[in-house]
Image (cartoon, rainbow, N blue to C red; front, side, top):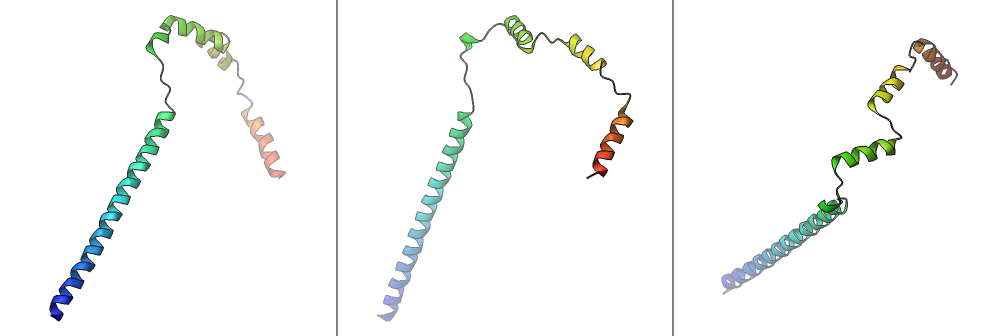
Length: 103
């Protein structure tokens, strides 16, 4: 009779552990699903969807881009880069060194 009681108490403890494991598994799955849903929502929030009907032709975009920048083209940019004087770099670094030493 006592052996019968021990078997019954052992099996009820096992049932409690199994039900706790099932509950934990369910909570884990639900938590992962919520995290994935939030991540997906945040990823979609940053995307901008543009209808294909409103996309201008390539020639229109080039004209708009050059006018928006102020007419800068590759040749203008290259001329500005060529006009930069870098011959007195040592003098510039001496000024910087003296400023650093004064700190």
